[in-house]
Image 1 (cartoon, rainbow, N blue to C red):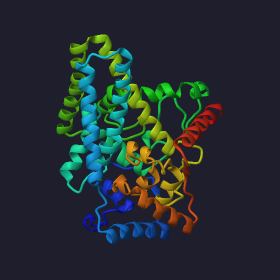
Image 2: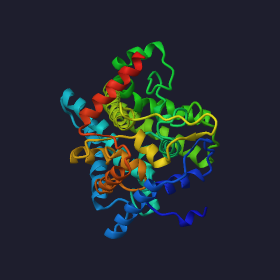
Image 3: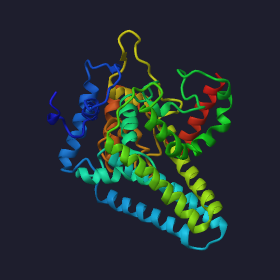
Image 4: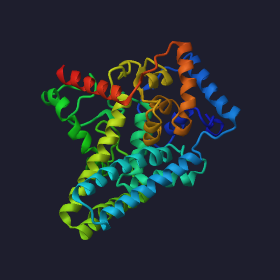
Length: 379
């Protein structure tokens, strides 16, 4: 199939592009016969952008928001280093800095990583590398998130985002004795997830060459080796060494810990509310054919949930990731277009009798997630 002929906003085309990159993908596949639902939905979304004569990438609102988030991060960082304030205010600012890091990830890095931030490739690359500014590795993220998670959402062994140490996220994962208490310790694991990601998991991927326990080993280009070590040394310098030299080792380490836990909790919770709630499914492929029963678009709808889509504040902070269904169906469309796309998706789901999972508020979704992990811990 010639890639040059692919439509720009097709979710299927997006998946195929990544499939043909230099990665070995699983033999697991999806049903491909008779897909009127997928073709109807793709056509409607394509027609929306043609009719309105707009790009499917970000716009001025996204660029202004990104600038605000970056300026806020720098301002908080400098304030913590050079302004003398009461301890409780400093702690609050550290919390806000951690939340700000998460919003940069949701709004800037995530869009750049999906090439939806801008029509210009270089601007997408710059926005994607904000992850490295926060200590992560965009090279690993693109493989783990864009390929494994977006192609095989909620499929055990292939979607590495649902493989969380010490947590049982679905029935296909073996139940161990400590899972009985996961309803009591989940918040600790979610809180340390960002710190563990930057200081442990990235190094685990680097030295093993694997994105997950069951993944194949990948060869890492020399350029990425250099970027990896520059990122980690830069992270240590900016977030640990400079603060220690400026304010002392104890305030610096406490501030780093508070910001890191705040960021990790935000990142983890948003992911869980989108994929690990009571109504979402965790499909398994047929043992003989290697096929998943549903076609790819319907699979995304059965494994993904929306929440709080009527809240402009939530949408603004999360970069539209509360519209997770639309994001998974069309990952190369910027989140600024999700409210409009949302109506097209719901209309098409209703016509074809395809289930659409959505929680009215973030609180409802959060409670659903807690009930889900509680039940999985019990049996």
